[in-house]
Image (cartoon, rainbow, N blue to C red; front, side, top):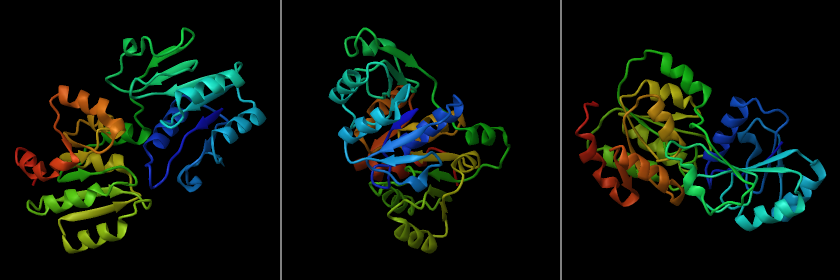
Length: 282
């Protein structure tokens, strides 16, 4: 199976983690990632790099897979139509979060808010819509079963925190000095600044390339994004505030608000202290 996906310190690792969870859960063998922007060191799956979608189609023609999965917002409706024109015999499966138009054999939505009727008029008659529960990784299943002592705030803005939101949040929390565990990866471009901040402010501990699930299991509260990590926090029964930092988070943000979970915009980060005072965290 071919998987068309991009991931890097610039665009984040969320879609990669989702695909890896999907491949593992459904025991999909012989998968290869084809990417335009990626770092092959960040995944155990084999990786083939391309320059553009034209080259992608050439790779598909050469490899002749039975199925192709696309989890990439930049692979457009027109790209999908061209794919099906070139490869009518290959099943095209597309992951979708935002109810976009698609021209594929199957659209998969793995979000709690997902509704099949939202795709009416947006897909061809031959397209199947599959609604799946969020793909909760195995480490979260294991961590939830442990009875760890809970203390402090868990913070994560993805493996890369591409927009550098973490430091802004930490500077707001400096006023409160609640114990904080900040989880990120070595792909974060702001690591030097984060290390310096946490060295000076002892209430903040920086965790690099560590198990996020274990970090959640040991925390009283979380500050995260309205993305896949929100489903993981809900699975862990961990209360949280979400900060919306990207357009592709709008549907999850809407769902969380409906469930009376606080969602802030980047411009509202200054309100975090006010929100946290309502919780017994320290």
